[in-house]
Every structure is written in structure tokens, then in C-alpha cells.
Length: 157
Image (cartoon, rainbow, N blue to C red; front, side, top):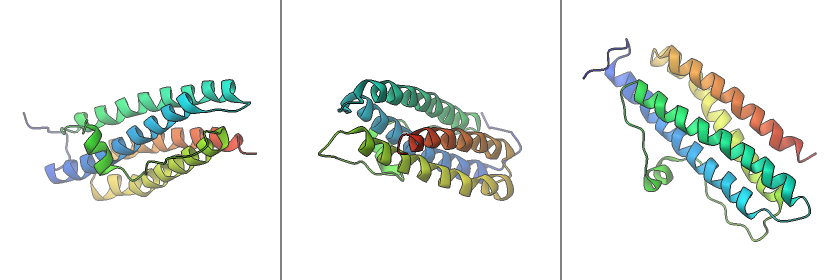
């Protein structure tokens, strides 16, 4: 059935393509945060183990909402590991040391990259693609990532 929500098919496809790239970024960041949760070591192990768990649970909810946004505009969300790696802007990192500071620096960089991607697309979605709903959605998502980044940054002081 055709999706008749007042946004052209071409614009909905462009939005869905960008949102699928975002979904890939969210999935990679989720996985990296899980890795930090599972593998962090050091004298601050317990507090960081719990902290990383809180963050990956938030990212799990974000991933679901991004996928649902893609579906709500009439497209399918990517959902394979290969497609996530193909569409992400982020990189996987391997490390020799599993200290909390290293994990935090890496995760902070990824959150900041997602924030920049979201900020760059707010007006594009609204003005170029005539999708105010997705523009509003990613504005709220940007604010969520800004808060998560602040929480990570606060551990580096």
C-alpha cells in the first residue's frame, strides 16, 4: 500500500537512506558500548560497568525508535550486521588496554560524530525533503546524544 503522508516518494527515500545510515551508527555505537560494559577493567570497574550498561540500554531504545521512524515513512530498516557495517560512519576500534578512560574517549568521539550528522540533517530534512516530523525527531535525538556525550565527558575531568 502506498504511503500517503504528504512527502514525495523521492524525499521519503532520501530520508530513509539517511536514517538507515543513522541506524547503522547507532548499532555500531551500541555494540561498542556493550563491549566497554563487558570488557572494562581497572579500579573503577564496577562503577563504569554499571555506567556503560545504562548507556547501552539507552542506545537500544534509540535504535528501535530510529527503525520505527524509517518504517513510519514507508521504508524498511536495515537489519543485518553486514548492512550496519556497510552504512555506518563510525569505525570499529581494537585496543590493547581495556581501561575506562580509553573506552570513554572512543565512545565520546562516536557520540559527537552522531551529533554532527544529526545537526547537519535537521534543516535538510525540514527544508529540502519537506519532512518536518523527521527533522523534529532527530532534533530530540541530537539532544539525547548531547546529554549522553556530556555524561561521558564528565568522566574525563
